[in-house]
Length: 393
Image 1 (cartoon, rainbow, N blue to C red):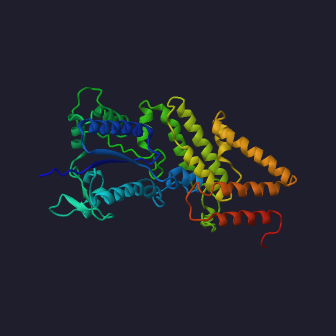
Image 2: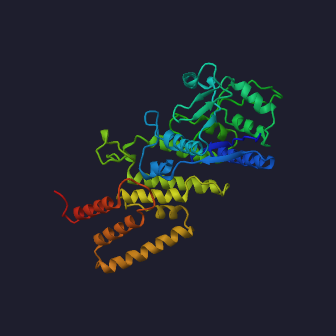
């Protein structure tokens, strides 16, 4: 008889705005898992999912101007977590026909989690059908474990792929912001609680306070303070009129005049984000809070929204003055503008019009949007005619 073997995929979802400390640890563990699997000849493969560029946090906030999430407007979960994970599950099921998803959920995490687990459970069955994907089943091996039992396993059993579990324990211990005592053996008077801290996105605005990041800062991770400060600023500014446009994305007038983020606010938020990134890169050169691809996508959205007042490259250059790519782009744009000025006989409105139309044409394929190029061009032309007094009355 021939052997029958299934592949095992370790799937990790990266929202691109994860707590940098956790992100670094997770990346190390994933590398160890993949290396150990290859050395042992096991059919175990690591897959890391990320949101599509048009669904990333910064493209939506700084690009489209979506106010940061709240419990009543929690747009981030689907775009950053559910969609990327669903896509890879569908892809793997398409290859093999079916799949079993192993989740580390537990009933004792919260009343909501316990209710969800009970809702999808089947009496006498270890695996249950996935609520959203056909031919996909869910297995939750630790659903009945208490928190103390989880930590006992982590501390008492060595990692099969060679990771240092004490490092994970230390991270959670440093992030503890309460007096909860993990039921693990106290070996010395210096023993601290590992706590019930939970990690998520460093920009998370759904919770009123990021206790885990605050505790980490108090326990020596001072480099994270600029992240927490910016996160707190964004929460405080979310519902201020100075930060908001009076219109929604659709163009309709917003209730109470609180629409998407205003052009000036988005530009200032991008500048502050880049300043924090630059600050942290002094000690962590590889840290990236926003990617160059996201910067390009943001610029495309600004142009397609007829926001030509601010240029991503200019904002980037104020923070990174020695950036060659951005500097070259600015020099090329300046040369093009000088040529346009000569052709247009010095008419600055015409120069602006032609320059903006060229930008729209150049960037039409950089970001997948439903709205077509023709509509973008028409919108900019209508704006020009309004500026010279020939617009619709």
